[in-house]
Amino acid sequence: MPSEALQKLLERMERRRLAALEGPPRPKPTYEERRRAGEESAFRVTEGTIVDAADTDGVRGEWVYWPDSDHSMRLMYLHGGGYVAGSPKAQRETASRLAKASGCAVFSVIYGLGPERPFPAGLDDTIRATDYVWNHGPSGPAPARSVAFSGVSAGGGLAASAMIALRDRGLRLPDAAILMSPWADLAMVGESYVVNEAPGAGPDGAAGRRESAEAYLNGLDAKDPVASAVYGDQHGLPPMFIQVGDAEVYRDDSITLAERAKAHGVDVTLEVWPELFHAFQAFAPLLPEGQEAIEKLAAFLKVHMAAAAATAAR
Image (cartoon, rainbow, N blue to C red; front, side, top):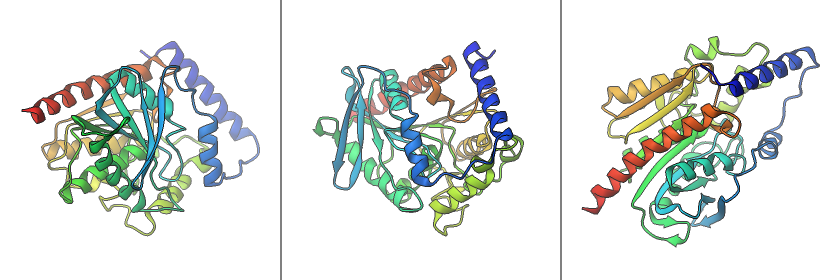
């Protein structure tokens, strides 16, 4: 049963959609306008959160943590934004809630976005950041006891592709991964891209997604697994927890990714949340469903990261 808060938010979103249909066509925002709007409309970060900027050896981002966070247990966070927008600042509140719930120190990565820094910049930035997080914490150089990946939307797709790339290059993988509404199929072939498309989506709809994908791919085949993990070999990847809303266009990316990972022997948990929309976890300040989802992701991280740390200590 959806919460009262969810019902009210869905009604408000529907009113906004209908109002947009009745009004004049909206001009297509530039990429810079999208990025700026994301930061200006972001939820205010919860009081008590500590945020430290980092810029070391080509790795840029910010540490987000709490006074009682375990600096040796590290969660790397990849923001969403369609591979062309978004930033750690825009999604700082989600990173803060993940840090609080999991007890980890979160490193939110600044990675390359199209069209200015298209593929493979984002993937390369993620791989460099992985090595950094294994060897640096909020207080400086120090080995991690455990590292996990997290990502939302495009960041979830990037996290999934980065794990494949790390494995193929013989580099150290994270111990676990949590993926929230990952955009993991840039070819966008799933049925949910049709049945869950909102009427009158305009520049936020299919055409906008295609443009974003092209700006990021820079000529790469959209079905290449280095960009679209649903087409990749998942053998040897760490345990994954994937959450997605049943009402979102990216739903089938999560289902396909989970099915493929399970077929390749990966320990994967998939949750499809009824009536929920894209990246609903980011609405935890408003929705009990969002906070519940974060708590479940955090519980998964605690189990797998503690087990990995204990194994490494032997």
